[in-house]
Each structure stands twice: as C-alpha cells, then as structure tokens.
Length: 483
Ligand SMILES: [Zn+2]
Image (cartoon, rainbow, N blue to C red; front, side, top):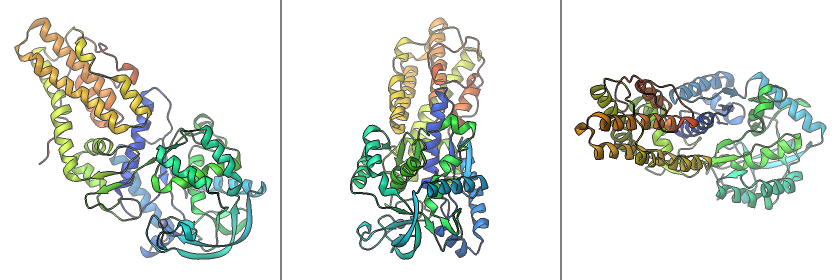
C-alpha cells in the first residue's frame, strides 16, 4: 500500500521498485501473482493539502493519481491493479466492514480526547511524544476532543501475541518484529475509528455524520483491491503473501490491521515486510511527508529506468535504511552495468557475429564456468528478501563470464575451441538475462532480443538449453557510461 504524498517522493519509487522485483521474481518461479498498489486519498491531511492548493479534495487527488500512474509506468512497475481509496467499490467494502464490526459489538461509541498528528493521521498519548512532538514528524500534535466510535482493539492483545508466537515470520525484519512485540506486551488501547470534522472520508453506515478513521479506510484497500468478499481473485490470492511498507507505518499494519481482520474473521496476511528510509548525503530522511528531495522520474530519464532500479535494489540493503547519492548511482552504472554486464553482452555478440556468422555454434557450456553460478544461493537470498545480496551474487557470475573471456582469449582460438567459448558465453548470458529480469526487466528484454531467445522462467536457468543455430543480432549497447 502506498500512501499518497504531496509531491514526487523518492521513497515511493523505492517501495514500488522493491515490490515489483519481488512480484516479478515470483512470476519467474511460475507462480500466479497479484501485485496491488494504489493511493490512499482520504483524511484531514489530504483535505488540508487540497485547501492550501486551492482545490477540491477530489480534484487534488485526481491529479496526484495521474502522477503516481506515471511514476509506475516510468519505473516499469508490473502491478496487476491500481486501487484508489476513493473508488466507489472500495468505499462500499469499508462501509460493509464497519457495519459488520458495529453489529458484532467490536465498534462502540464513547467520549474521546487525544493528541493527534495530522501527518501520521494518528492519535498519541503524552508518553508516545518526544519532547511534546510527534515521534515521526517532530511536529506538535493537536488536542482533539469529540465523541467517537471505537474499535475494541484491547480485546485482541492476547490473540495477537499468540499469533506472533506461532507465526515468527509475520513481521520482518526481526528488529521490527521485536519492537511490535514489545508494544503489544505493553497493552493495547481501543482505537478511535471515526472523525467528526473530516468530511473528506467514507461516512459510517450507522452514523452518516461521521467519517471513518483514514487508516482504517486505507488498510482495507488490501481486501477491496483483490475483490473482497466474493471475487475469484479474493478466493485465489487472499491471504496476501506480503504487505511491503515503510517502517513508519509498521504498527498500523502489524497490530491494528491484523486486529481488524481477526474481528472480521478474515485470514491475516502472511508477512508484513518493512523497508527502510533512504537518506540523502546530507542525512535528510526522504520519507513521505518531508518534501521532495530528488525526482525519481528525472533520474530514470537521465540514467535509464533500469540503472535507477539496479541502483536502488543493489545499494540499499532491503529492510534497512540506506543512502542515495547521484555520484554512487553513476559509479554503479559505469562500473557494474556498463563495464561488466553491458560489456559482456557486447563482447560476446560481436564475436559471435564476426567469428560464427551470427549463429550460435554447436557446443556445450564450459563446466568450470557453470560452477561459477550459485543458483541455490540466489534462490535462498531471494527467499530471505535480500535483494541487494541477490544482485551481488548474480553479478559475481557476470564478472566470472568476463574473466572467462580474458582467460580463454577467444581471439586466438579456432574451430571447436572457439565454438565452445562462444556457446558458453551466449548460454551464460541467456541465464543471466532470466535472473536479472525482476531487477531490470527492460534490459532482460533487450538481451533476449539480441540473443534471439524468448523470455525464460527460473526453471530455464539450466545450462546448455540454448539451441544451436539460433540467430543473434547485436543491438545498441545496453548501458551508456556517464561522466
Ligand atoms: Zn506524525
């Protein structure tokens, strides 16, 4: 779930690319995947931002959605559906669920006074605040006092603790899981789920003057987006294997959301994975509310979509905070993409065109070279969501292929010896092209076109599957170096 920000924000690009990589990896395994992203469009934060911009909220969010869809396209994001929380179907699901919870007695009315951070759209107690300010945004909270409907979250503390105990992989990384466990052990308060003065929201079916707490509305997207309660997709794909979110909204996803689902009798997602924040060199956190620092669309235009995707997935340890600098992006583009991968493909295809008439010769891939690819390790790393290590492992094979050329010196070879080297290279590049597909889909496609092969699945990452006589066609170089 992506929360709608005010401007093009780098952290969202990162989140989408990470989710896309994981979704594509599972498709590569031959699984059917439903990849959902979208925008959270209600609540007082949006309402105020629209006012400041001199726009109606709907007009404001419509414009933001155009931007987000552009961002997805620019980053080659393969989402199966894009949900907006202002979609009528979604709003109906929210109302139906609230009605259900109200009838079951899990939603009840009581007076309420609390400290509210508009940026988080969340209530805090005095002890949650840091120097009297929101712990995430470091901004003062507002005192909000009103009669409110509450969700009986306190009733789910024990059940949640039990669930965490039985499902050790429910919240990842481990550090976040422990943090959530500690908060759970400290006890849960009932949660205010209605707002009186926020007309920009979904009205409560049992009290139409009030709107639903925006987080409740937003979280339900995971169900409405996959067609809850009756669609085929819902039956096929729920419970979700993974929610990929930022660390700042972990509590909402790993405590509030599962408590709602338990109350509704709906299965919980299998994993809530928290990715980190990206810091710029100056150390500013580029999260959703701090403003634009770097424009991902411009970066994709300047350096190519795949160079940006590669950088984000390679540089930042998935699940931890990381750094962004344009200088580091340039270095990885020049050294790893242009010099290693681009160069390998280019050298191999030039030789096949020159020395083998542009056709894959009959041979087998060098046994020693085959051993340089550790497919098992790659699969294990992906299973652990160590995307950065996966890429490093794939690229160690790219390096091995370049070394293979230098050692064999094919320019001094002829006949069967030459054929063996050329075949080994082309076959290895085919395997590399499959493995990089989730990370750099556009580059994988270009390599396939040059090699004259169809896109493969992970099961095709075996050597010697490349057919003799396949016609290759060297194309443009894959990555241009930058200064
Ligand atoms: Zn806040």
